[in-house]
Amino acid sequence: MNTSLIILAAGMGTRMNSDLPKVLHPIAGDPMLVHAMAAGATLDPQHTVVVAGHGAAEVTAAAHAFDETATVVVQSEQLGTAHAVDQAKHALAGFDGTAIVLYGDTPFVEPHTLEDMLSAAEGADVVVLGFEAADPGRYGRLIMDGASLERIVEFKDATKDELAVTLCNSGVIACKSDLLFDLISAVDNTNASGEYYLTDIIGLARARGLKATAVTCAEAETLGVNSRAQLAQAEAAFQARARVKLMEDGVTLQAPETVFLARDTFIGRDAYIEPNVFFGTGVTVESGAHIRAFSHLEGCHISRGSVVGPYARLRPGAELQENTRVGNFVEIKNATLAEGAKVNHLSYVGDAFVGSKANIGAGTITCNYDGVMKHHTHIGANAFIGSNTMLVAPVQIGDGAMTGSGSVITSDVEENALALARAPQVEKPGMAQKLMDMLRAKKAKQQRGS
Ligand code: UD1
Ligand code: CA
Image 1 (cartoon, rainbow, N blue to C red):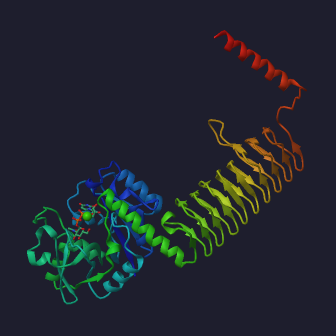
Image 2: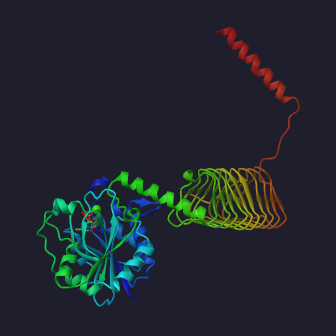
Image 3: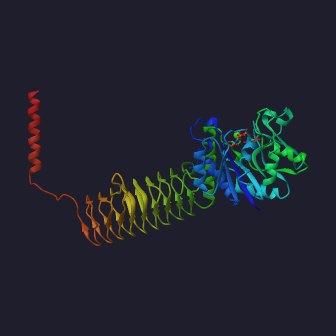
C-alpha cells in the first residue's frame, strides 16, 4: 500500500523546561523524533513530512540527519493537532494513498502496530490507534459502537460518563490522504481549548456515513514524553526492552541492568558483554566478540574474536578487525586495527592504520593533531612499537619495523628497521652516592643553623 507519514513535532514542550525542542531530547542516543521517524520508515513511505514549529531549524537538521529526503513544513502558530496536520497538505498534494499521523514525542509505536493500522485502513476510512489506559488521565476517549468508532472526545470536553471510558486515543491516525485534508477543512475550534482538534475528524467522517474504527496496542507503545521525569521513564523502558531483546538474540549480558544501549546498537550472537558497558550510537559488535567491563563505545565496529576493555574507549571510526585486542585505558579514534593487532595498555591511537599482528606497547601515542590539522599514522603489519613511543604524524612505520621505548618518532621508519629516537644513556660511576652525601650534608647544616 502507498503510504506517507505526517509527524507532528511543532509543540513547545513547556514542561521540559528546556531550550532544546522537546522532540530533540534523546532517548538511547537519538532524538525522540528519530525514534518515531524510524518506526514510520519501516513502512517504506513515499513521503515523510515533519511538522516543525518551536526550534524549527534544529528540528529540521535532526530530521534530515536521519532522512535527508524528509520534507519539513513549519507550523508557525500551534493552533491544534488538526491545524498541524493541515500544514502537510501542500507537501502531499497529488499523493494518492494513506497518510499516517505520528507524534514526534511518542517514540515507541511499533512497526507491527503501524502495519495493523494499514490493514485496518483497507476496510475503513479512518483508523485510530487506541489503547486501554491504566490511568486514562487527560487522554482523549474513544467512543465506540461495537467495532465502529463514533467519535473522540477530548478530556476537557468530556462528560462524566465519557471520562469513565478507558479506551484512549494514542494520537496515531491512518486515513486516505485526500480525505484526511478534506475532513480537516471542516474542523473548527469551538471547544474547551479553542484548538483545532484532529480528533474531530472522526465525528465528521461518521456524520458523512464513512467508516471509522480503532486498532489497539499495548499502552507501553503510546508512552508520550512531556517532562524530564517521563523522559527518564522512556529511557528506562527502552533500555529494559533492548536488553531483553539482545538476550533473546543470543547475547550474554552479565549484568543487563548496567549495560546501556543505543537505538541502533547491533550485537551478534554469542557476544559477551561484561558489566557497565555504554553503547553510544553507531556500534556494531560481531558474534563472539567480548566487551569487558567499563568500556565506552560509539560509532565503531568490532569484529569476531576481538576483546575490548576493561576501561576501553572506542570513538567514531574505530574499526577493529578480527581477533584484535584493545586493553585498559586505551582510546581508539578513526583508526583501523587489522586482524590480530594489539593495543593492550594506556594508549591513544587516532587517525591511524595499525597493520595485522602489530603490537603497540604501553603508553604509545599517535600525535595526530598539530593544533590546526589532523594527520595520519600508518603502522605496518607485524610492527613492534616500543612502550611510550610518540608517533608524530604524518608518519609511517614499515612492516616488521620496531621503535625503541620512549622514542619520539618524527620521520618514516623503513620495513624491518629499528628506530631509536631518544637521548642516549650516560652513566657516571659512584655519582649517585656522592650526590646523596652532598645533599644530606647540606640539610644537616641547615638544621644546625635554625
Ligand atoms: C492529543 C489528542 C488526544 C490524545 C493525546 C495522546 C488531540 C486534540 N488530542 O492530546 O486525544 O489522547 O494527544 O497523547 O489531538 N502539536 C503540534 N501542533 C499543534 C498542536 C500539537 O505539532 O498545534 C503536536 C505536539 O507537539 C505533540 C502532538 O502534536 O507532539 C500532540 O499535541 P498535544 O498538545 O500534546 O495533544 P494532547 O493535548 O496531548
Ligand atoms: Ca501530549
